[in-house]
Length: 215
Image (tube, rainbow, N blue to C red; front, side):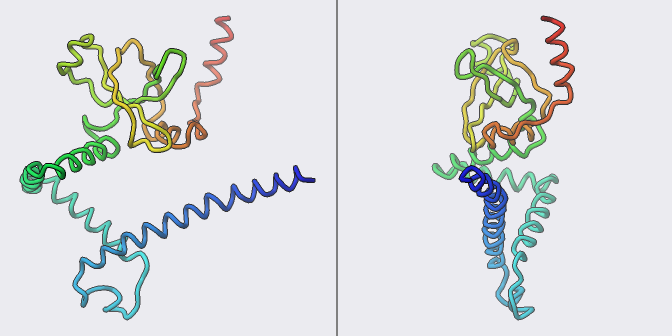
């Protein structure tokens, strides 16, 4: 009897807990973005124009601001403005450290160029016999790479669970890495879930057959 009750309670909890957390998170974000309405002059706010508040208007305004900011900074004039702005921030001791760190993390997760995570690898870390996921960040030949081993050194970021924005930077020989077919997004989901969410691999059956044949 108790086993059946426990089973039903867990099943119900698995329905309501993710739903409740999602609702709370969305509600928090909507309220957070609604704060951007304070940027508008009081006479032009939706509550003044319509006579009542509309939840989510701040989110729409934020998306519009982000979109047009992106349009601005992707052209020549915008890039020059950003260089001047970043040059100003670099002169402020504490601000320059925080700004540079957050920018590099954002570029790693959302960028499409050389600063973004490029490949997913399987490595033995933190010791032989233990495996974890790592993201390739670059192949640039700096002083450390050259003195550590040469051209086959790969820069890697090893994320932590459940917060992948924190982790460890390591350099590893290419021969010690196993490149995976999973995408960066799939690997991030696996890291955040602590291994609960495992991306499907269509070649699994063929791989298992090959192992059996090798035996």
